Length: 407
Image: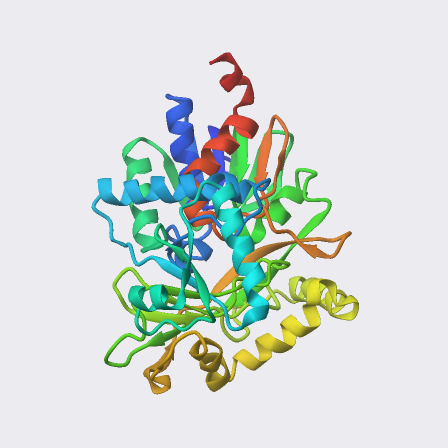
């Protein structure tokens, strides 16, 4: 059996894995790096199926990693798109209120944004309509000029080419299978790999890989399916991203309007509990054992009504009725051609981490590991936006702390 030996092996070819490899090239020149990706190319799951929004950073509490990296990540990915002539739509964003009860949360978002160094402003109804004549809000809205949209697949492909040009080896259609010894593992193709350091960015399967190294003892991943409805009518209903005031107790931002990088409009997403990790459509890729385990966790959440899971699940079932789904977005604009929303987009799965002891959905990024392995357990939105500075922080504090101290 041939043993493939590398200084660093990254599991998963999503945006975080690609960004991690870029930082390793920069911080440890000359090191050998390999990326294992179970699909035939990068960005086939969450990294290529997300909204493409570059978030500004006002949703997150100041003590969180998300708050620390979102604003900087937005600036750096914007610069990366400009430098590499990649598409970007600086369409901005407004968060609108439905009624008086949502205004305190709107001001809380403004407070968080300013604490995080983000350019945000409370604007009145007149100013909101000057930004976009169709935007509807109650008295006030939150304005974010730094929010943009990009093509996450295009960015991932650019990073892949950059890494290949610098000697990073990609192993396609090859996934992690099981650990062998303290510094090796067997792949899904029964190949053996040896590493100086393993970096787990496996997304939907990150908790399973981590468990093989003795980590993720307090966590498991619960998948949530996100779907968008595309507008295919004549005139797009909005020219800026329009979001509702979110429930700050859970990690989902609610049904909203997204102006994509090409100027088209979609509404969504759903946040529907999925029954297995790749539950995109029908029963394809269904793993019965995995489905039973996830269903047990979901049943427990439903029984205990953790973080309002019952109402969340019921609301998500309602969203599968297209008229109800469109109606949730209609309240944020003055006029809406409801018949223009005809086509469901490609589904995405959010790899949401659940604390199995507290029964809470984990809101922030989570990283665990030791001197042999590093595990990124909760790289959920805004992971695309945060990818560059987050990867740099992980490399400095978890992958190469000894090397960074010497420098």
